[in-house]
Amino acid sequence: MDFLISNAYADGPAAAPAGGGLEMILMMAVFFAIMYFMIIRPQQKRAKEHKQMLEALSKGDEVVTGGGVLGKIAGISENFIELSIADNVTIKVQKQAISSVMPKGTMKSA
Image (cartoon, rainbow, N blue to C red; front, top):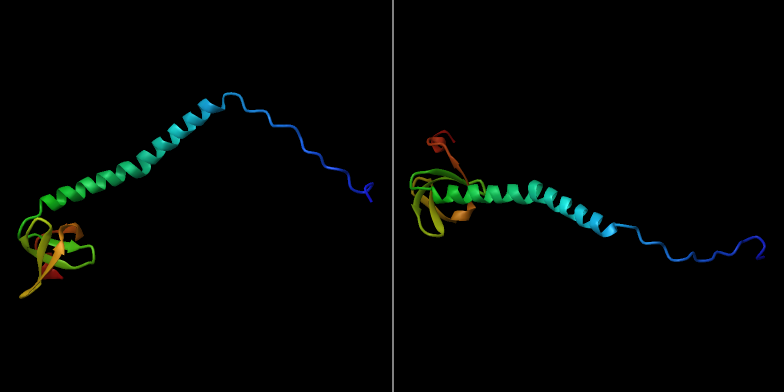
């Protein structure tokens, strides 16, 4: 039955591409630049803006937490903020949980 199926033999070693090292380094550099400008840099910019917003918080500001709780700042310590969310109701949240500062009077309309 060997006459119906021909034998398959392995080919010799493949030739190495010429100049492949420089092209690979250039491609990696371009890839890193794209990743930096599309992902890393915008994320660092958002983190810097969030840090500045947290440093600028003061008593009486109306804020929203990451969980969606709207409240007025009643007290600020180093790591925590006391939020007044209703009459005689205050909660403590971490500073990092504050997602945005709302305009004055937002709580009255909500």
